[in-house]
Length: 206
Image (cartoon, rainbow, N blue to C red):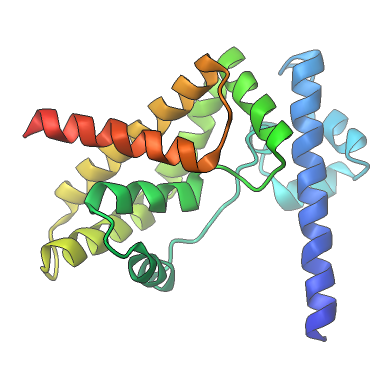
């Protein structure tokens, strides 16, 4: 199999994924979350329900554009190498956005998705359920970030779990703020706001 063939396959998979995301968002906006069934989403995206499940586990994942990302040791090493002079909070928040943050989609879909989160706040719970599923990987990653900043070999799980919880809450509040304000869903601005929120909390706790 040539690299060109693999590249074409990846592009086609991405196109299908984005069609499913757009179809899910459009249907919920038009018909409401109850009527936006997997069959309806698949039909609108011109794929079979079986194909749908190759990309998403449920319709909520398609609405939010959630994707599973493995937080491997290599991913953490690359993140630390790229983080430069970022402080602890920024480093953790950036990692969270890289793993559970804004999915790859066009600006119009991202804007509509935020509107849907405001209408149906239970959707955001699905995104953080994903973070719960990934908790062990994320905690291990945060421990590595803590060790990198503290110069220690192991700072222990409790501290990592608390930092993960605080930073995860900062991401959630930033998303809800943006949705309530109907703001521009710019991923960089959203990330910046989440970092600000977490820093404010950490400062008050000191």
